[in-house]
Length: 132
Ligand SMILES: [Zn+2]
Image (cartoon, rainbow, N blue to C red; front, top):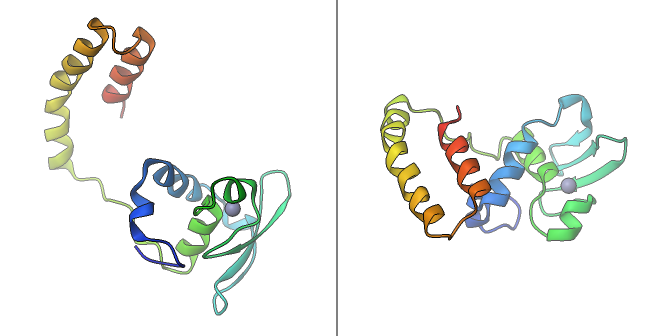
């Protein structure tokens, strides 16, 4: 995945995966305008603010705070066809993962019992592992 001036490795960091996932939730009606030639867009936020977006820059708070691609940049990249599809669900791999869950739960239970993680964190991990 390469667009703008970003090193492709940035997009697989967990915080960026969250932003890519959030970008999918931006409704098309929030794209006020898009210029495919110049690779720019104006995207409105949830409370009506208007963000000026390029593949390298955005006027939103998140971009200014972290200086990395925000959800608006990912939305623009997706609209321009520059964002490769996210991993597809794979039933075989899902089944293999499902079978590994008891061992994963046990691994985190040992961390909990050793005092390395709180009961809250242990329960959240177990719930996440067992969620859809
Ligand atoms: Zn932004």
